Image 1 (cartoon, rainbow, N blue to C red):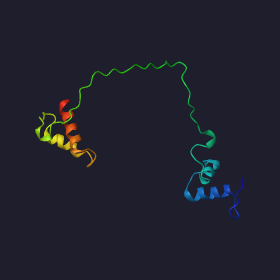
Image 2 (image 1 turned 180 degrees about the vertical axis):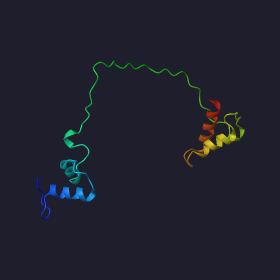
Image 3 (image 1 turned 120 degrees about the vertical axis):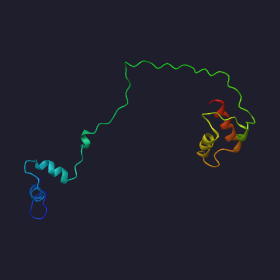
Length: 123
């Protein structure tokens, strides 16, 4: 391959660059030419394209119904936050810290009170 740049060929140019940079002449010129020409780590011809297949030895998944018992009703009017009975784990300060992380306007006041009620109920 001889690409002319002025009067010199590409291999001659590479040898000249090697000498100027201080690369030992033991390295192959083809490798250096690839770097100069912008070759990539892996050629496109060697690219591996994954193919979706099924494992014939795999078992057939069995799905079971999840039984959920009777859920207790949520209170229509939850206890106000001021009247809650806080616990050792969920102190008033900790609950306020949790509520402060909820974006403003995301929940209404009644929804926040319901949230606190459920947290304290299942503490």
